[in-house]
Image (cartoon, rainbow, N blue to C red):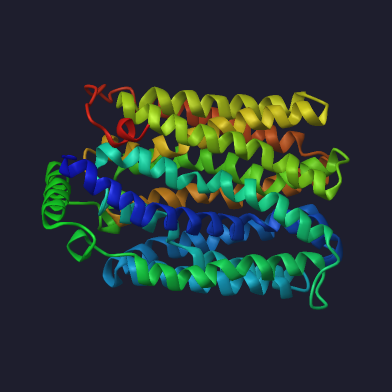
Length: 435
């Protein structure tokens, strides 16, 4: 007879994970597909590299401003309704990117898109804390977050194909890309509303025994976290560990968005065609997707977080720095692949650290604070990359700057996690049972 915990988690996995994975693929692609559009859009709209970097980065200003309110609203209205709302509005605004006609409208729609998408990722992470006990969470988060590289693995060739086309419905190729890639988010909003459930008690597909086990396990974890959760924004702002985690995530997100927004343009500067650029951009993220799943499972199997996070972040920094020193396109792709492997491997392990460092189950506001502060790197580093490219004629100095910031994050994480105890190896994990 299959143990209650194993059968319950398999059902949760099958019910939620494929849908959430697809949703996050669509989310991330709609966030960063502006990098592929830039291959022709910048010339059509007369955008400089600095203007493009500013527009790409403005997304994160409103994303930051609305993320905590969005996640408080998520807890009030329930994950099912609020996540569906987020997806519907971001889908509509992603399609609206097709109709920008200059710098001002480009900036305006990117700001609106950031506000619309605010709260989606931390909302999903918080949703998982309501359904997935901590010992399974790195595997779940790692599999869910494989959407980040998979968005580029799948999206890069598709976006390149659309950009290389003659366009549809009288639209330019980059406009066609925005319209086509906005449709899945709108459709999935209705699927999310139908499929998600706000709490285990609402899951008609779990047995009564499984509901009792899941509810009691999650309640026990919350009780071990202390007398309160970090739901009060004032308390969150006064918690030093949250600022430390936010800075480390700032470094990780900076590398992620540096690759997502500018790798297509970097490959284009290497004199590749648009189609070649699409596949060259996809390759590092495919390596990253493999690393993300395997590294998360390794961390869960060993119940070790600190060294898994540090080694992965170190690889991300080294690979990014090496890409500047290597002249040939194929060698650059190899260096970017090392960086993507480290980056994507670090992400799922990173999101297990808040509970360890805070000695508490982090509430929606705490997760949102880490995510929103960290994601500001998408603004800061996009602007810097664009300005540096205009002034130097190369992306090399910008990549080195991102790598240096990442190196600082490595040492901050090294010090911040020095007191994390090494847990005893566990037996009968979901990860080991599915391999």
